[in-house]
Amino acid sequence: MGSRPHPTREGPQDMTIANILRHKGHDVASVAPVTKIPDIARILAEWRIGAVLVRDSAGQLLGIVSERDIVRAIARDGAACLEMTAAQLMTRLLHTVTPGTSPEEALQMMTMGRVRHLPVLDQDEVVGMVSIGDVVKAQLDAQAQEVDSLKAYVAGSV
Image (cartoon, rainbow, N blue to C red; front, top):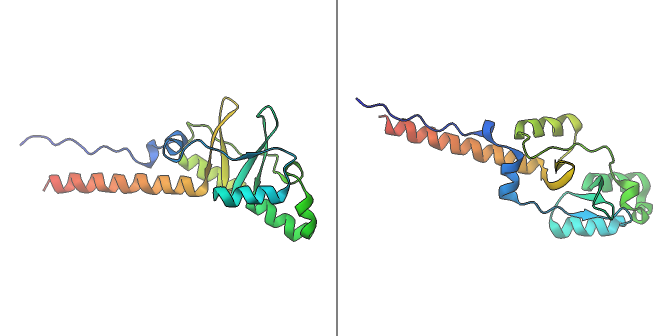
């Protein structure tokens, strides 16, 4: 009786943020610090995204503005928030990941930091952004692939 090869065990533990960006893409919506909140809301709606990065004219990452930030500003300041700029509303203390970060680490950062978007930096350069949805989807896809591989292995050994 010959030996069968073991199934490949490439699962969620082998996935990285770089893998997610390879499938998702590296496009990131960014605005200038002087961008008004209604313009940011329009970008969020047009791109169908939940957050934009705020960058200066040199491309330096300054912060992030999310849908949640806008909703909180409306609740706090009412219509006056529509005159605010990205610089006034943005979150400055950013949680970031690198292309080599695992989805598990990213999810832990998101959970602990109560954030839904993580800019991806490679040597201080923005190379993408992942949302909690991107990370969860990647993990579910990897787990489904692992289950299929194990099913195929078991079916082949009967």
